[in-house]
Length: 106
Length: 157
Image: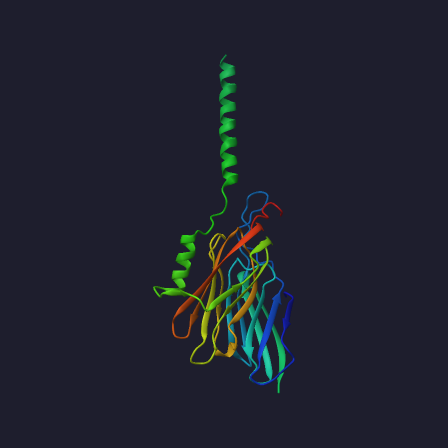
């Protein structure tokens, strides 16, 4: 399981715009590099990150090989209600990772 | 005499082979061209007009290491149900592939701004386009100078 790091404020006011930062450890092998013997290293990247807020999708991104290793993505959302913000990364070679964070909205 | 000729032809063959090998080594993986970037943009925007403005790319103009360049793309939008940003797309001119990232947003985002770290192979132009809820496309481009490009770390493994 890849290591993930999520930064979501623990508390927020209703209607406040919060920043969500996500980081996951992954080599993001581009598929354009070669070994000493000239053999192409096959592509192995994370291509999708989906974020849900209490089960409802709020953010989706498609990543390409031009994203640096250990993909870091920051985005925003409106704090509507207390609950769970879930994250799912999927990629080549059946890669899949999930993470979640709790938020309390006052 | 006959032996010498054979020797010569061997040398000639060797030189030809060496030249061929050198040529093979200098062939780099195909890189995207401005035309490839335009094509990738057209794939997203179709025939729609793309106007400059509203979108802002924020990244350092001079980068030492192209392996991880922090980039922020923000779009000037109230992000309401009636007027919001639907998607943001980033393209490069001289990376092996023109696409960098595609983001889908909605009114729940509150603010149309994303940050990520990207790879840049060379000094080049980066273009971001955004599609608004009314179907219009807006763009911004930025020239970035790279002193050490990504994708050059071949033969390290």
